[in-house]
Structure formats: structure tokens, C-alpha cells
Length: 202
Image (cartoon, rainbow, N blue to C red; front, side):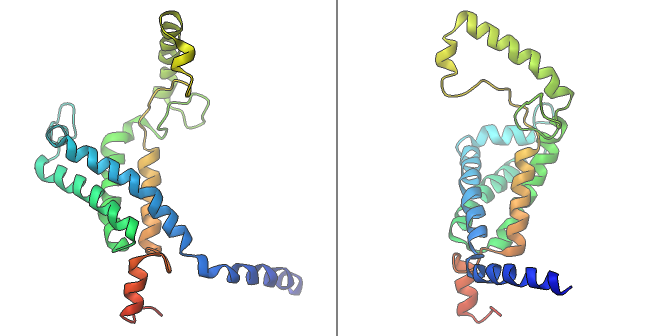
């Protein structure tokens, strides 16, 4: 036990020395999520009629009730919530509706496609849908190689098939869940300074 303690104490001292920087992780998650959510909200707002149609149509959309209200809430929460993430204000509060949006997106839009966002037949997470995409991708490559400037078209990266699985929505959900528990972070959020000003920090 003494040997274990002698090994643990130096490591613990190092970790304690970097504790004042523990607000860096929530900051980085906030700054990663903010542009993703802002773009998603902006896209919905700029094509609001199409968004409402997609939210409300049960045949090829989500079939949600009150699609105008739902679309406005989703777009507004994503766009304005992104600004709150940037400034670190009301982080625990705004993470709740954002998590709800990610959960709805994962279950209603992406769930049937499996996990992977990009079809990768070599992945152990590949499902039948991903396996079927390999033939389509190879056919597309053959057509482009024969009739297009394939080297130019792939000069910035390989062609892939979007599988549209739950990967991104689940990842964003977990990041928001983490922010719900940690808050905006020490020193680097408005929440911290407001709590400090009002004597709410222990």
C-alpha cells in the first residue's frame, strides 16, 4: 500500500498543479459545438419553409405536430444556443434543449441508418446498408473515371457515400451532457464570473 501511495502522490501533485486549467476542456467543447449548431440553425432559418415542410410531412419528413412551431424552436435553439456556448452563458440551461434536439435527430432521422455517418465497409460498425453502399460507390467511381476528370474531382479527397447514421448526433449529445454537468468552465465563461460576483461559488 505504501508503494502504491508513493507512486500516486507525485502524479496527484502534478494533476493538482494543472487544476486551475480545468475550464479549458469545457471551453474547447463549447467552441467546437458552437459553429456546428450555429450552421445547423442558420440553414433551417434560411430555408424555413422547406424546414417546416420537412418537419410536418409524414411521408418523406418527420411528421411532427405543429411543424411551424417545432421548426422555429429547433432553429432558434441551435442558432442562439450556439452564441450562448461561445460566451459561456447559461450553459447548463441551454444544454438541455440542445440535448433534446440531438436525441430527436438521432432517433427520428438517423437511427435506422445505424451508427456510421460516412459509409465505411471496413468498420466493425458497418451494417447491411453500409455494405450495400460499396457496390454503389464503386459504380460511381467507374462512371467518373470513364466520363469525368477523376483525378481533378478527387484532388481534395476521396469520394464517399453519406450513411447519415447517429454518429454525429450521439457525439454532440454526449458533449452537451458533459457541459450540463461541468458548466461553462472556470475563468473562461460568463457563468463563472456571474456566479463569482454573486457569491455562488464554493
